[in-house]
Amino acid sequence: MKSSYRQILRSPKFMTGLVIFALILIMMVVYPLLMPGSPLYAIGQGSFLAPGTYISLYDAMDSEREILRLLDAKEKRMDALVSREDRVAMMDWLTRSGVPAEEIHLEDIDELLATWRAHYDAKNPPSGLTKARRNYFARLDNKILAAEKKGSRIVAEKDEATGQLKESGLVTDTDYVNIRDVANVRALPLGTDNFGRDMLKELLAASGTSIVIGLIAGAIATGIGLLLGLLAGYVGGWVDDLIMFFTNNFTVIPGFVLLILISYSIGQERRGAVTVALVIGLTSWVWTARSVRSQVISLRNRDHVNLSKLSGHSLFRIILSDILPYIMSYVVMAFILQVSSAILAEAQLSLLGLGPKTTEVPTLGLMMNWAMLYSAPITGAWWAYFPVILTIALISFSLNLMNTGLDQVFNPTLRG
Image 1 (cartoon, rainbow, N blue to C red):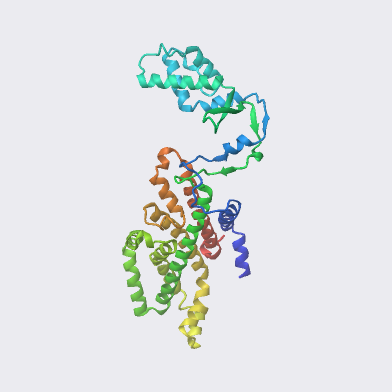
Image 2 (image 1 turned 45 degrees about the horizontal axis):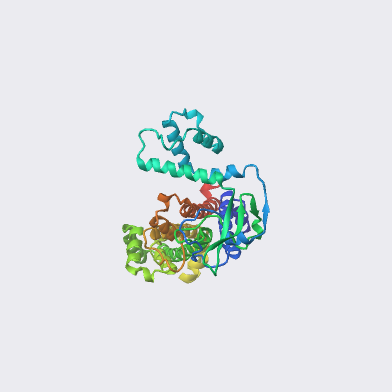
């Protein structure tokens, strides 16, 4: 046994899978401690806020201001103001006006604006532009001119006596505040989803729920498959025929179709995470039962089993003491695969709208469902679905790596 443990710990594939899975579990525990609160609480009033660090402008106004004169501050400000779409549009105007394309530098905002000022004339637009397009360029030019002229902005407050606005302060383009002085700062490494919820917190909570669903479903499927496989393989005869008849009927019906039908018949209000796990487990035991049966058939006529029979040991003791220990490594590997399959099955069900009810806990499949319903791929909100896909892939990859590593240790045909 100790030798087997050493071989497992020396298996590169098993250890790699274990490390990946352990890192996911550690993040699931640590991040909620740093950012407490419900993962389903909406912190953003808008949907699909981009990843980044958000600071309260209200608090920043009251923070102590310092003067910084950065050489590239204006260039960065204009660079952020003029979007990529605006730059391409400006290039279209300039090329129509006869400016050679090699003289237009889209990436250098100073050069681009200098070329724009030299050739833009709202009164003499190039031919072929619609009125709406000409108005767009006029608005863009006004926006650029306004940004270049502004060196400060007035802060006004309402006079309670007269009801009029009066100047209460001035914010110049050289005013800066230390982020540590701002009372409310929130880092959103993965932005927010369509409901304005912290994607990273939701993703880690969903990973935990999906793993729990996988463990419950895997335990049920492995337990049923192990019990039926042991009985069919060892007892044989009419017991084997009856169990295999039952198993073959399940094999004929596609497992996922059966899973869909059962989940749909339950109804969304009664589909909690545990219920979904039970349904997945009760519909995915077939291949485990068939595999265990084949393993037991190869063991039931071994010398130590026959000796136990002659000694008058009970059926339960023979299976528990003389057969089960020899297939335990195989059962563990089957359990790992069942967990991985259950996580994928939950993701598929939830993507179809047949997963756990959405008001209780998030799952990886539900997050994919929400992203698809609210057109995240179309709007370019990659952070709402790509991290979910990556997490599902990493969990499945780590579990399959552990399974492969165990198979190499315990399967004699794969050693060496």
